[in-house]
Length: 64
Image (spheres, helix red, strand yellow):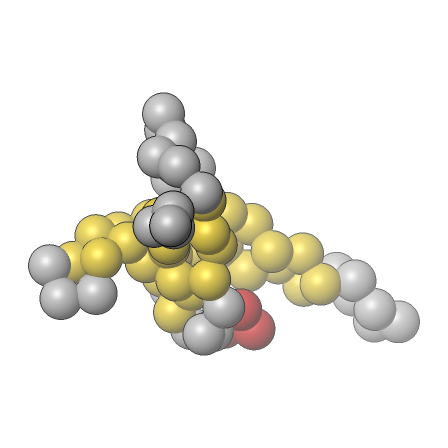
């Protein structure tokens, strides 16, 4: 059984989702940009990688 490596998203439209890797990666992306395209203007949300002892790796929504 392979133990996945997980970073969960906190806040914004990706809240509750997880990014999962099957093995450790050399360098996690420190920032992820989520771009929402629809009939109106383009909306971007930025998530920054943090680690906490309680929850592990998290991509937290960047405050504007």
